[in-house]
Length: 145
Image (cartoon, rainbow, N blue to C red; front, side, top):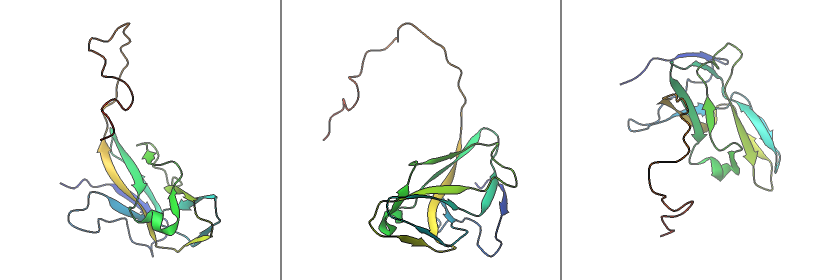
């Protein structure tokens, strides 16, 4: 089942984000510009789209599995886009860190990150003085095997 999302492209010569195969769970975002990222620096790469996310959803952005081959990773690990980040000037960007010792060139149209839509259940906090379950054992308690 596909949801129809409103999207604005900044540069119409670049394709809309798309699923690369029938089994893909995420669609690829592409760079709107040629950019060079110097070693050990972060660049904010424009991804050419503004998206209207449905109510009670978020769009999550993660690195494509091949991003590390370029010497890059997402500086913030994952991007979380709110449903109200959707104006004409709210172009999506990827914060990319060059972990290599050489400049990395990104070309206009390069696929860098991937996005997927996720429903969100908002919560209200109910503070208690004691939890009604047993302790599980803490961070890493299920072992490393």
